[in-house]
Image 1 (cartoon, rainbow, N blue to C red):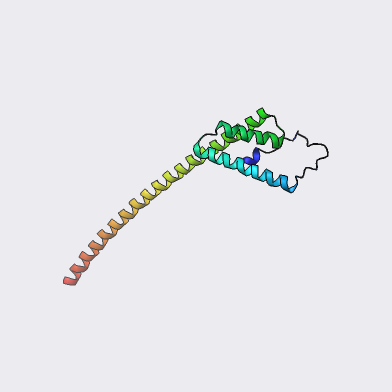
Image 2: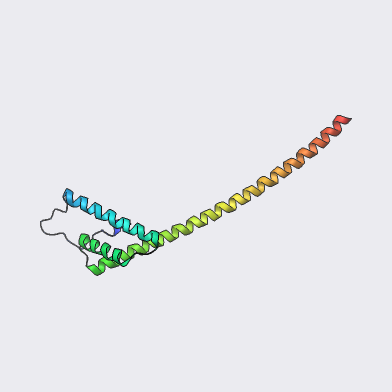
Length: 137
């Protein structure tokens, strides 16, 4: 989810003389901010809303890391949050549908087990009656 936030546009170029490879400290810092933004999004999905402060902070980090303007970064943050929220709602809907399907299957199976037990009891009673009559002869 957060990977799409920090994806650089193909049209942007790196600074002159940059090798494109971050040093170890910068890479650790980038991993930490990526994890932090991920936690912000996870909390926002849990609570149901992305606070303006969190949105502003995430878009500042995205703008800094990708070279996008602040407005484009805000749009990207809001788009990613909207997609994540839609995916969460779709997952919830699918989970409810699967639970409903499992409930129906369990009820159907229980009904047939009950019917088979009743039929087995009736058949056993009938056979006992026939056996008792034969014994008495």
